[in-house]
Length: 293
Image (cartoon, rainbow, N blue to C red; front, side):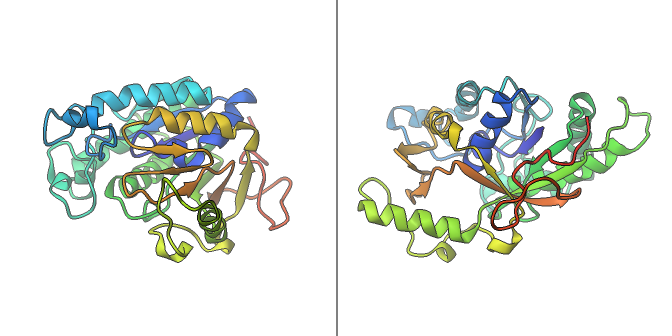
């Protein structure tokens, strides 16, 4: 399995339990992170000097956080696209970070930059030869430019990796491609559970529709039961102390909106054929169902 994510922590939030489950089962799991997350908001007051507008060292610190999180999940192969620091966190859409010389979002307007990023993902696909690739949908889940670019680069690299070419490595076709997802019904369940606790540490949205992400339930095609690895996911979330607060079964980013730590994680099949056992909603229960070595 190859996972292409934008910043350190994205992988654990969206599919950390799934990664831990497959790693524990002996599956080769490779995480490819596109930026260092240099523009993340820092939750630890003692580390505020690392911020981009000060020492600009947060990216380096987050390398260590990601490594610690991967140890919690049992994932030993984790890499940065083009090497650590090749691509920089672009910040939210419409902010000055979008135009920084190394900003990942510059790939949207710089053809040479886009080609370079695609080639870098292609090389990893051909080296690791995954049956399954996981990334974001066309809007990057919630519109962050780096998530959108991770989607575009990964999808283009899939096509390039399958072609016979002289740019190195034997061609490889990924059999199934999934985009991360979360049903709005599951988000609502988490909101209701948080409200029932009194929401002491975190704030709570009133409705799933108020959140900037989420999928209609009928869009979701796979549900991976990794509840046995939920504690590993919680530990991995705690490893990202500059970005994430964890309180039992809930966590929050800098917006302090509490979300449930999911042990069942959800995906949309973007390429390939659904196969294998299904849950009560007709969703796949194994991302590798129907694949061949």
